[in-house]
Amino acid sequence: MLSDDELLRYSRQILLRQIDVEGQLRLKDSRALIVGLGGLGSPVALYLAAAGVGELHLADFDQVDLTNLQRQVLHDGQAVGLSKVDSAINRLQVLNPNVRLVPQRQAMDADTLAAAVAAVDLVLDCTDNFTVREAINAACVAARKPLVSGAAIRLEGQLAVFDPRREDSPCYHCLYGHGSEAELTCSEAGVVGPLVGTVGSLQALEALKLLAGFGEPLVGRLLLVDALGTRFRELRVRRDPGCAVCGARHGG
Image 1 (tube, one colour):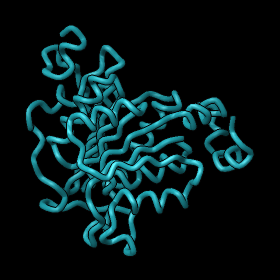
Image 2 (spheres, helix red, strand yellow):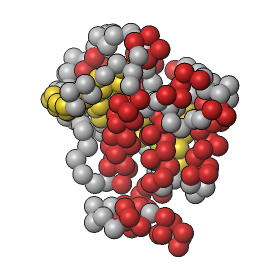
Image 3 (cartoon, rainbow, N blue to C red):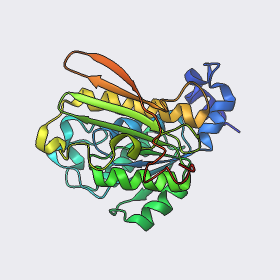
Image 4 (cartoon, rainbow, N blue to C red):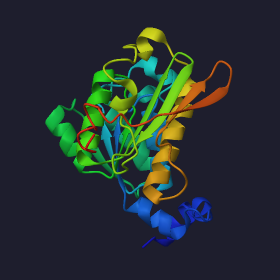
C-alpha cells in the first residue's frame, strides 16, 4: 500500500485517471535499469525517482568531469572526480528517500549485463556507444524486457521503444543494423544541453507509461527531434523477420 507520505508526494500524478492509485502502486513495485548517468540518464534518473519508481539500478563506470556539467544535470561541481553512480545516489536519495537505489559502478560484460537486465522490469539505454547499445538490445531481447532507447548529438535527437514481449515490435538491431549509427560521442561532435534534457525526459515518460500501464508507448515508431528548427518527426519502424538478434526468437 501507499503511505500517507507517498499519497501526498505523488498526489498530482495520482489525480490523473490514467495513473490513479493503482498505477502508482505499479510504479512502486517496479524496477528499472538506467545504463548511463550522463546527459540522457540525468533527467531519466531524476524523473523516475521523483515519480516513485520503487527500485532504480544505476549503471555507469565513469567519473564526473567538469565538461559534463553543461548538460548532465544530475551532477554538480562538488561531484567532479566522483563516480557518476555515487554522485547520482547522493542526489536521488535526497530527492526521494522512498526509492531503492542499486549501484553498478563497473563496465558490464555480456554476463553481468544479462544478470542486470534479468533483475529489472525495464531498461533505459542512455549511453552514447553503438557497441554497448547493441549489447543492451541483445540482453533485452533474450530476457524479453522492454527497452527505452534515446540518443542525442549536436542538435539532433532520437527516441524509440523496443518491446520484445510484443510480436510486432522491432528491436534496436532491426532499426540500425550493423553500425549504421555514426560512432561519434558528444565529446567529439558537441551537443546542446536542453536537447539531451528533452530526449531524456521523453525516455522517462515512456518508461512510466510502460511500468504504470497507461498511454501508447513509442513501439514501432522512431521519434526524431530537430532542435535547430524545433521540429518533431515520426517514422514507422517494422520488425525485420530476418533480424540476427530478434528474428529467430519470433520465428522469423
